[in-house]
Image (cartoon, rainbow, N blue to C red):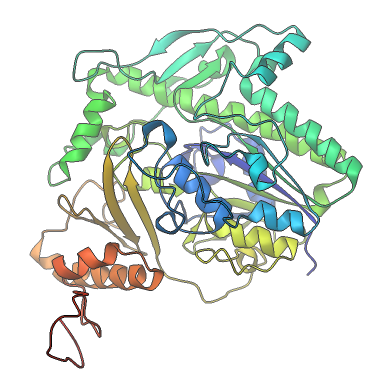
Length: 497
């Protein structure tokens, strides 16, 4: 099967998998993404390497796990980590450029502070920051050229912080027509670049990265009021008590002010979030319609995913943070490759990082550099290759350093928290991850097996987090000295415990 030449990469920010009709939400207004799933491949176990923007986006650029590329936190809440990839770092857009591709990015960058998309070979206006930069000169020019009104909001939704101050803005009503929204602007700029690339006739990689549905959810009337809050089911994990959980989770709940808002307001927040997703879906429809009008559909592979998920009240939390729940680690992942089977659903464990090798294979570029990435093209083409039966994720901090590692298997999830209690969930019996089983004596065999597996995977990767695990937990029989001392005169052979 020959590969199509072009690649359209559609990405959102902080996007829950359960907001799409294709993933089972009967109330969702996502016809465009649902159609992409119907005509392509839907991945049901698609995970982010880390649930925070900059590290996840750097993993996409490099095909490397965060511990390896070392962009470990967002610039806005950086806790002392690097803010840019080192000079000379390999990234896939540069590899595509070397192959003769046009490469462009419209929308959110957030993969570095000093370095911009142009430094990595990506065309397009640089839009810095973590949320819609509504004061950016190009956006203001767009509004002025069309006689559209400026950004203005009301009906703000926020709670109360532990210190008595106003909480973070979570949602608001936007007083602009649809055509003036930042989402419409991004789609328009993407369509303009599609026309430019079509005229030039070279193969292209074009990314459209929306800043939403990241909070605060700021949308115009027709989307702010699109979903009836009374029809919105609350997350079952709203029953979270934090009993037997790391204390940081309760602290994060207070920071995000969940308990200071009435339950009706939480329903409204979820309804507005779903409306925000619907707004983005409609703008994706405009882009895909333009692709078809240009006659490029049959020669363009289309990806849709996000950097990570969002809590929206699950576990009495908002945003993301040091809690490795499915709400923020399992994300949507759709790929349509012309000529590949339509309507597939794959249940292999895959990662956002795997997009890097997939893009390179589609472009006919060797994939030696993205060492933590594996091409998804065999799965999209309906093949049955041998595949890893689990997935690893990591976290390094947001607001403060907080290292975590996670192993997700078919049934279980293990989370290692060095400063606190570890977590173990049986997702078959407890899909909402409310009951931490880690300390239960009857779970010792499962706990030991998972700890050993995570230790082995981290050691194979070269993630030095494994050193802590070797001294603190039962990780199984070892064939090496885990102390790294090199000073013990006694020799050892065989297994070392």
